[in-house]
Amino acid sequence: MAKAAQADTLGDWLGSHPTLNRFDLEIALCQVLDCSRAFLLSHPERQLTANELEQLHRWSQQLYNHVPLAYLCGEQEFWGLTLKVDERVLVPRPDTETLVEQALVRLEQMAPQASLARLASRRALSVLDLGTGSGAIALAIASERADADVHACDLSPDSLAVAEANSRKLKLAVTFHHSDWFNNIQQRYDLIVANPPYIDPLDPHLATLGAEPRMALVSRDRGLWDLGHIAAQGESYLHPGGYLLLEHGFDQGPAVRDLLVNNGFEGVSSCRDLGGNERVTWGQKKDRAESNHE
Ligand code: GLN
Image (cartoon, rainbow, N blue to C red; front, side, top):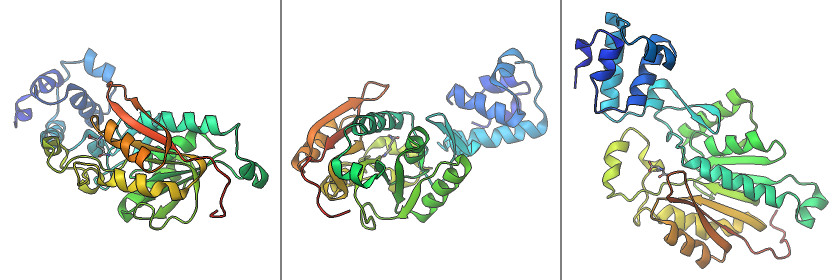
């Protein structure tokens, strides 16, 4: 494992960690040497100083311990936004961009056929990101829909601090709430999105995710407890005709569709992520006359 100390060119160092992800190693080098990836490819003979080697050694040890590269760099790209991330929040995954994409499609569909009540009150389309973590989903939506009223909540004050810092840094307005799922949510929304914890506590894959907050990853009932809770409560927090969109595990599509259908949602459907796995499932609340629960 501790081979970095023997490598003295950057090419040697890259070759000395064959079991680590090559991209992670290249980004580690770019950060430590403050250079581009193009430079790495064109200057494999560049000598590493003792200081650089020591720093690279520390980074590689962390990578062997499954610390995500994003924590080492302190940031992660998501939906073209550079988000600050650290051990307080789950690292936003590319798969979650599928959830953002689907949320934007639903908002686009809802905008022209606005409900009469919303048109009469000139109310903006409202969105809630449940369990926002770093704020990734809420901020991605806010970056695309300046006209929407975007809210986000989380149970963890630590993660809210990260999300609020990202909102300030990116100058994207999101209203944050400290809430255990819907417990402290006081209004209805046109669209609710969530990437809740959905990994089975017995999933062996968890061994490689130990650096990230367990509460953002693991859910009882084979990973389905939080998805079920949100599906059961979501309807009361949606305007008629509003949508609930849920990210879930690659094999949970049928179970999540059942959860939404059994809780009265209509038009229940799923779509796949870039890896071809069912990843996002949504349903629409029945569009009957609006009640007074504004
Ligand atoms: N998609 C993440 C993973 O499998 C899990 C995220 C979650 O539980 N919401 O690594």
